[in-house]
Structure formats: C-alpha cells, structure tokens
Length: 114
Length: 114
Image (cartoon, rainbow over all chains, first blue to last red):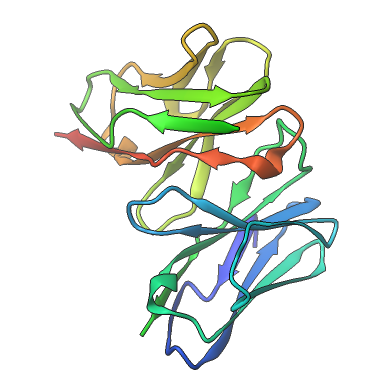
C-alpha cells in the first residue's frame, strides 16, 4: 500500500450505531487531518494531529471523537450521529504542519446516516 | 482572517481548447496557495503549489498558475484541455507558518466536451 488509505470506503449507519473510520498513511509524515466534505459546501477541517498530539479541533460536535495512536494511524469514532452528518470524510497527511507542506489525501469514506 | 473565492462553480470547455479556472484570495499574511483536483469518488490530488518563490508555478498534467499579488489572484490554466481533465478543482490558501489553517474554495467543476 502506498500513500494514504481509508477504510471503509462506504458506510451506512443508523443514528444509534457506533462505528469507526480508519486512516493510514505510508509516507512517513508527522501530521494527520480529518476533513468533512458535504455537497455544495467547502471542505471543513475537523481535526489536526501533529506527532500524535491533537493541535486543532474546529468546534466539532462531541459525537465525533478522533484518536491518533501513532503517527501512521488516525481514527474517527462515530456515535449517535445525525442525518446532517452524512458526507464524505477525508483523511490527509503532511510532512509538517507549517506553511508550504502540501497535504496528501486519502480517497475518503462516504458516510450515510439513516 | 483569510478567504478564497473561486469565481466559477462550473466551467465547460471543448477538448483541445484552453482552460482557465479563476481564484481570488485574501490573507492577512504572506500566503501559500495550492490547487487540488478531485476526480469522482477519489480523494484530492495536489496539482501545484505557490510558496513565495517563482510567481509562475508549473504543476502536473500541463497545468500552471500565476500568483498575482496586486490582483490577489491565483488562476489555474492549461493550454489544451483533455477529456481526463474533467473533475472538480479546489483553490486553497494558507497563511505563512501554518498549514493547519487551510481554507478551501467551494470548488469549480470542469466539464470537457468532445
């Protein structure tokens, strides 16, 4: 595997379910990110981890819970979601988190909340 | 504060004709600017980036962009469109010093007609 991978690629869950999204980067990067991409809206940055420490949390509801056990893996734990949480969730990584470091994106997980 | 405006939500060109995707930005600091492309059901791929070096930036697949500080613009161009260029394109700005504060434009959908 190369680059940034995400599993699952598609997920359908009810509002009372608990599920997790997984992201893995094979690039030796130090920073990882979660984004939400909804139809007709710009990408929204949700969380940033640098060297396994959360450095950014953009007012995301507590029903989204990130976890970064090491610099290669990032999880997004989901519980009691709402239909408006249906979106494409993208993971990204970068070598550093100062300006000039481009982010490399995974293919995303398409989440549908029923 | 920073923002980015993609002036066209949809652009349609014929194969073999030039492509112009427009992006204006505002930033309180010397920005870094990026263009990403997203094909259907795929993650975002970096096309090119500007980080205060040469103002004319060349990217992958024949794309290039010119940073014009006086016009606060970073338009993306390609001399000759190919069918495989059909995708959504995102202009992204980040202030100098922090890649975690990426701000994405709302995207431009490029259609290439045969």
